[in-house]
Image (cartoon, rainbow, N blue to C red; front, top):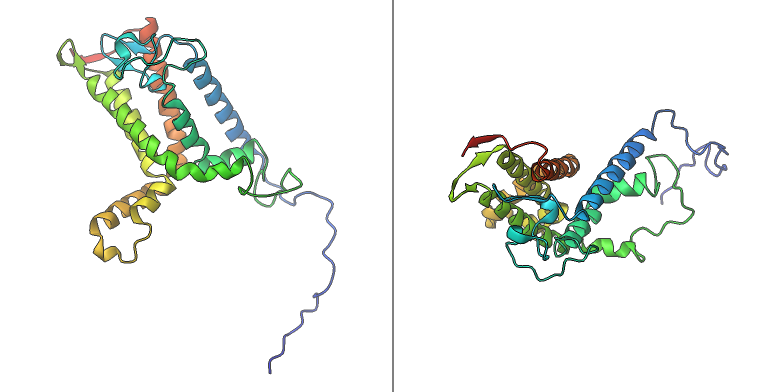
Length: 267
């Protein structure tokens, strides 16, 4: 026979606290910074995607990632995969890839946390009440579609391959090897995109999930350890890639618009 000790305060009603939170630090600052940062980036990216100009430098074959692969009639020399779409103003020149990239980012585990807290205030911070009266998690429409993140990862991998190809062919200048500041920016952007994509939680599960014995799968185990190290930096890489994407696009736009010439090291 066992007995259960009774705490002195057991059965008492919870103290009535009028304040919504007892936190006295600046808990609102991180979600505010996130809100401003994401809003600024989305605004810039949306404007650039629908500008339909200054996205390609033919002399060095610099193509901004916002327009890759370019598949409308406007693309000209930038069309590496043909031009199956018309050049209507409301059709992005990279219409086949942008929806998948947007889906990959929107369903990313870090970005979910970021915009849940900063845009939806659900909740805005730890120990701060949710701004909504009801909470159903990601079990109802439309948030139930967050579960397709694992499939969006595959599309993001294919797009990263395309971005890598864009960076490689940019080293060809007049049929010879060429190297400039634009090449450095393109390569850095691709490396960061690969790091962000591979640091994805879905990639980590694909690498090592459902394995009962790592010793029997040394290659997958090695890849899993690498991905796991990247995964700890997933949040930082999410922000870094937003920066490298914007920087790459802005630099190529400046060259295409004739604001300044590319700094060339070779040819």
